[in-house]
Amino acid sequence: MSAVDVNRAPATSLGRVGVGPAIKPRDSVWQRIWRDRLMLLFIAPGVIYFLLFHYLPLLGYIIAFQDYLPFLGFVDSPFVGFANFQAMFSDGAFWQAFWNTIIISLLQIVFYFPAPICLALLLHSVISTNVRRIIQSVVYLPHFISWVIVVSLWQQVLGGSGIFVHTLRDLGLPAVNVMTEPAIFKGLVTAQVIWKETGWGTIIYLAALLNIEASLYEAAVVDGAGRWQRLWNITLPGILGVTMLLLILRLGAVLSVGFEQILLQRNAVGPAAGEVLDTYVYFKGIVGGQWGITAAAGIIKGVLGTLMVISANKLAHRFGQEGVYS
Amino acid sequence: MSTTIDAGAGGQSERPAWLEHETFLQKAVKFIVFTVVVLAVLYPFVSVIATSLASEPDVIKNGGLVIWPEHPTLNSYRTIFAGGVVTRAITVSVAITVIGTLLSLAVTIMMAYGLSRKIWGSKFFLLLALTTLLFTPGIIANYLAVKQLGLLNTYASLILPVLINAFNLVVLRQFFMGIPGELLDSAKIDGANDFDILTRIVLPLSKAVVAVVALFYAVGYWNNFFNALLYLNDSSMWPLQLVLRLYVVQGAPLPSAGDVVENAPPLQSIQMAVVVVALIPILCVYPFLQRYFTRGVLSGAIKG
Image (cartoon, rainbow over all chains, first blue to last red; front, side, top):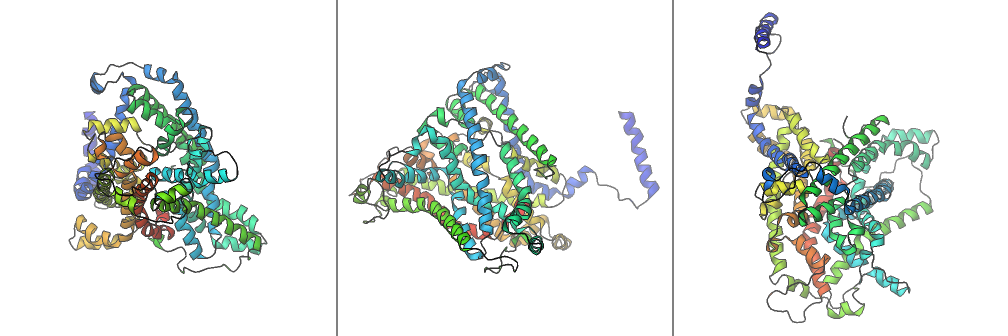
């Protein structure tokens, strides 16, 4: 090793002398750090934040291989190998939560995912800018409302004293409190997501729609293309890239469904209908103190999620789309 | 920078010459769909506000359903502002929102500015931040980290773990990158250091986007309830959203604050008054927020 260094050092310096001042001597790392010291100082707090709260916590997953006891800590808790994973896979509650998560995710992909596309296409077809702005400012609003308030609003409208139950009663139908009915819980949370996020979701599609060259439409009209042909051959291909991108992100997050939203309503319908992976981890781990098993569940969820993102991205490349990263 | 250009700068209709006029049926369908959507969004808000203003007879009349309070009263609001749980929770929420937003803004601006220039390691540090948009450590890991750092049961646990949002960082960085480099270089030749450049040139040029990011952070802090649930054991430290969860979503009886008000307002009205109080700050900043969204300030950043 040292021999190589000794050999290389004179060679480089010779090279520099030989070529002359045409090649700018590259600053060493330390010189560059010194040159950028003030800027590096600017980003230091941010970098420390990301390390401390996004990367360092990953070390905590070591407890998935331990019989973790809080008063013993990471160092003294005994290692148990894969016992936590075995316990988790034989836990019926885990599988219950797993399948609930998958079903809710699929419901959201089928029913929520296309909703912003449809609304964006409709909004885009509104010619009056003022009318469009008024509608936009209404439909963006729910995005900024916390889940606690959204659930309160829904209780107020659909709960026992809301207009929904009153209407049912007036029509002589049985008064169903949809907020506490386990059978329709998964549909309910999907409907809530549609109510809260559809409007906000249109932003990115509207931006993509505005980016489509107007000359394409003009040429199509000259060639005699009608409304639907233009939609099919120009508009939809124009937003395909961003649609794929969002679909990849959604598939990557298939094991995470509205944690706050479901946590707030799980008790109203019970764990059989309302438990998802995140609430399973919360109730069993943080509330119940079963640290090892829930850390194992966290690892499984993280690994599967990462695999989903990578494979969805690969798939996008195969279809000739950009994807999230290259 | 071009992203700030208004999509429909005229503010008026711009019908392209080639576009055919819609049939009556198409217009009608569109009108009905938009009316339904707008009503579906707005009705719950109207209902909550109406109920919060209702008095006992209003609530009893229709078995709890209040569409228009015939005897509107502010008694519910008097009750929750009479001290006690809700008043204290509002104080906590306001303080966390103000302090958190200022801290987040300062740290995010500095980092975004640093990463908007070609400095040593900027690519790596950017990747470090961007990766967090796709992958999060998870609840258990976050909890243990906060515990190890000694932040459990402190107000800092409501701010530090969510100090920077990578999305906001990208929005700011994208905007800073659009500021012409010559402008900054000439200031540097005149002897300004990076700190001067940031505070005297970059920030005055970025007021609008900084305002949007500030509002994003403020809304985030105001709305956050899960961090408080996770990290605060002591219910006397709870912010408003958590109090809302206990008394409205879970329906626990609200402890009366000191002396009981005459003609005590119905429970349902008090609950809805708490909801309205939690809503008001959002409704107040919303017009400012949405002005930028509908103009597409952020769309460029999203694409970038």
